[in-house]
Image 1 (cartoon, one colour):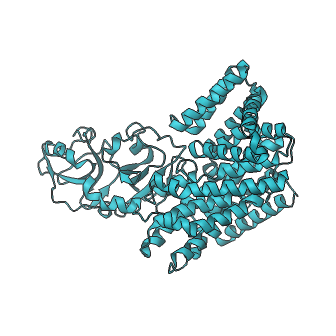
Image 2 (tube, one colour):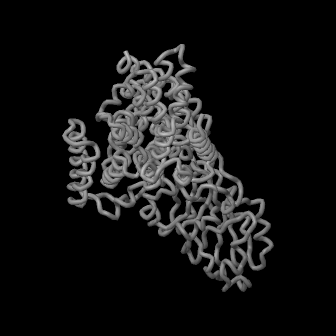
Image 3 (cartoon, helix red, strand yellow):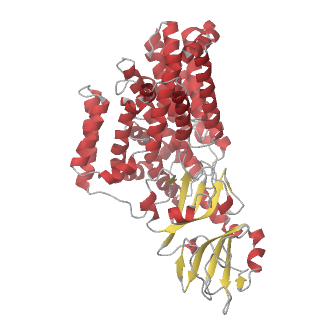
Length: 591
């Protein structure tokens, strides 16, 4: 083993460990790994930057805009409402939900689909007294099934497609992956409405959990007449530095102020609403001029009025809030919202909300202004899954333009009239010219952190390829699967890609496995397409954990799930996808 190979493997293993331990945002970790390879001379500047001009990555960027235009049109909301039906037969409703969701995900980014459908499904379940936990994991899985049907179903497919083009290959056709993913997806849906449905728990949602335990974390105090606190700011009164309580709202003459700024001045008879550990309420009792209301009946609904509302938000994988407390991130001033409670692993965290170190997947209950949802609905910091009362919907003419544009884009790419990149470029230009989407909106829809991760991961993949590290790894896998032949190598590649996807991210898993798979195919003297299809399917087949795929993370808190629920329901699906992929790939591309 040469020094270069050893150093590249050392950097890649270090990167994987950092991704697994979530020491920072995934895009930053991968960027740092690429920077190390560049600064040490392993990669030249041109090779390190090749990912930023990769056709697959640029196509992903364009499709973010297309998906954003669809989301803005309001078309998706109507689809899911009609699909669910009456709910008289739960399994039938589940089937009716999963089929169209999978079909939509074949052509649209699955993240906005899950974000938009989650509050609708949850509300539908609540009205029919059905546990949403029976529907939300299947919703996420349905988008994963659909994402593997087409070239544009998920960014992972396009990343592998872009890599293939760089190596002088033709890339995937629009529906080539469906040879494997269609039968796998149909079997997956059948599993979810039969065995999977039985294995899904019937749990209370995060919304219900917050509501039921509100008396355990909400408290109220009143500024007494002639109090020494009257005229003082929140900061001066010492209400910002309480040990276990966090001031979230002031009620004055029936008017509610939330969030509460530190410079806000107190007045006599102000009602102060706190959240946190009620065991520390003695702090309030020790403040002169403040009377604790012991018999208060304050609840979550009581916090809301015409100007303030409760919003549920899921901390995303790319959020700058990860591993920071609300104080450290200056949450209140940055987002103009106060954290009422934090829900994690089917439980509310019983401590002062300002001191909780946030993690990806945490469900935040926020008290915010009415315009909060419109301002932050496209934020990369978190996913908002509360019902939007007044969604931004464009007129029917523009909705039709969006639909026609997408259909034409798909047809142009499917019949090889234009490459996928050119078809997506034409679609975005058409959306801009018809004003179906604005430049300002487009900037919000593009997930720059995802693009950065893909671009940097491609550079790392190039380093694995050029130094011979990929060939060394490939030789090892070929040796250990020698007795099982090509199908053994396919199974190992699928299993390893799936494991990477579950513990890091799907795009990083695909990029790291591409050069290894190409080297394995060359050593075995078989069509490399067999292995590229395998890693494309496996990189999206993330069913066993909530952290491997954004769609799973989004429904984690709202469904009231535990980590073990994904293992119990998802591992059989992982095995199913491995078996179906190995058999079909072997007989279509190897035999």
